[in-house]
Length: 363
Ligand SMILES: Nc1ncnc2c1ncn2[C@@H]1O[C@H](COP(=O)(O)OP(=O)(O)OP(=O)(O)O)[C@@H](O)[C@H]1O
Ligand SMILES: [Mg+2]
Ligand SMILES: [Zn+2]
Image: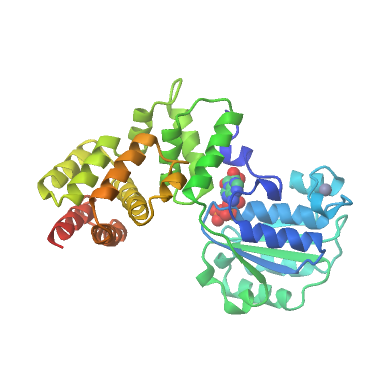
């Protein structure tokens, strides 16, 4: 594979965007009604589609296709020009690498001239929170009176670092983490297109570890493919990403629910011997206990889960849900949830989970 997956599978039109339903709906509607704002702000976690949607919108706003619902057509001259990245009317600025006032100043001069060929000149400013204060102020000035032929799309992963005065001058869209189930579906589509055989279980593991970022998921799939000879083996993949084996996970779930400290600590010990990544371990435990809570509260949730969890795993969860009460799941989740952020500062990676086990047993 020559091209990395996350580039190869960058969506080309609104229909291919995974999740981000309300963002896509509103942007599509604004194309249909030809009501285009002059400044947009896309905020949200990394790898959730901000730059991708910005580029699609830039093309759609300028596309020459007659029927608006088909924009971007990705075929007309303007779409092609924007695609190639060399078009003079699409300017992408990465504020993380060019933080200076100079860039914004030349931008201020640039926006005065009319677009070359397109209807709108589009400026995509990525990681806008990284601009220096002076550059921010300069940008603010341009946002105060943007010329009619310019569209700004600002993107950021750190909304709290963007000045309120900028936010208030833009149409703000919040991108969300992508649901595990949707990530798994997207990965599934990729492996089918690539004609590679990958076990659902592996895609499921990657979807959990990606924590809502489709780019991370696609990179992990790349990594997995690069590391394997022939067909991907679940065991191999678990080792590669430090994911606990299924029996460890099940064993731990059982030990925690039975307040069996001795077994639980042995499993922690075994997990570090097997080089399990404690972050993945906690993530998977939290995810599973949360699913069990859902199953306890409404067994009908089983149908939802069946879409992306293997039958044996689901059966085990159903049994645990039957045998334990809601309070128990609440206690476990509370303590595991408290343990998770401690991983960042813990002297030993096993300690947060070990302490959580003790606390749960005492409650
Ligand atoms: N919502 C999504 N739908 C489909 N693909 C996505 C989505 N989000 C991310 N991807 C995949 O991840 C890649 C990177 O996405 P993108 O560059 O749009 O993320 P971003 O939100 O701009 O991230 P960053 O904050 O790191 O700049 C895309 O090329 C695509 O393969
Ligand atoms: Mg981006
Ligand atoms: Zn077009």
